[in-house]
Image (cartoon, rainbow, N blue to C red; front, side):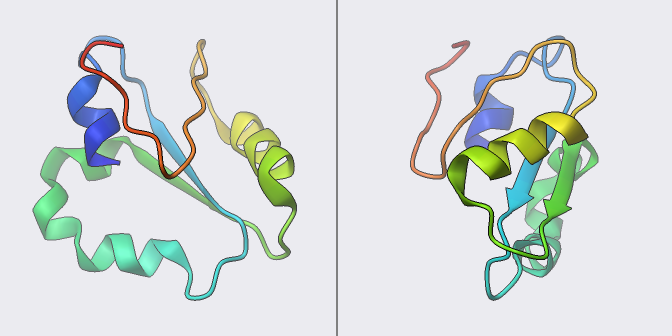
Length: 85
């Protein structure tokens, strides 16, 4: 989350949608616990928690449905974007 926030120009970044594909433990409490280190990033993050695992494409589809921006960029958890990608 931090790498996306830091690599994206602020005038371009509308939101970061994190899809939790029914992981155990859930991702949101982990983020909330570290929230004090995220600062302004927390205001840009939207979490979508799925009750049942739907897989990579299904999770990306749910993230797209939950997004409100005009342009969507998908990152997997192992990807770090280059500066001003």
